[in-house]
Length: 93
Image 1 (cartoon, rainbow, N blue to C red):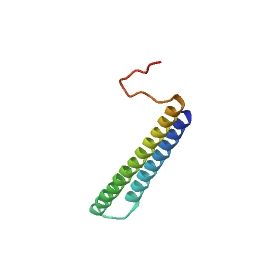
Image 2 (cartoon, rainbow, N blue to C red):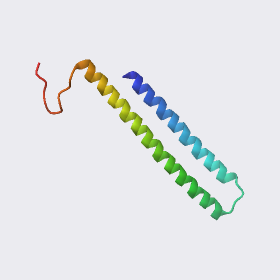
Image 3 (cartoon, rainbow, N blue to C red):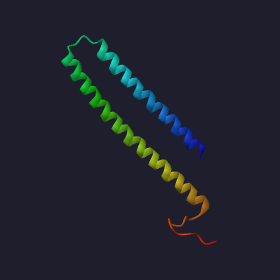
Image 4 (tube, helix red, strand yellow):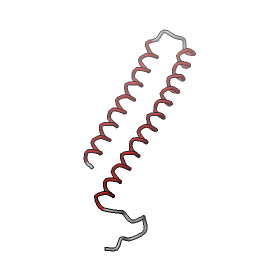
């Protein structure tokens, strides 16, 4: 179980680093580019739209991986403990 928490922590750190890197790069590019205000706003709008799409896709991927990890862990627990009674029912024994 501790390994799963460590994996999750590493994954969140990597995702945070990627997000921060994208934002810093976008801001630096916009501030250093010799463009008019309208062009800069258009670029910013496109960049934020692309970033939003990437974050949404990344969230889906992370959600899928977390769900898969939970299912694997649950299967391992069920295998070790035997069949788990459905919620709301008490096991007799």
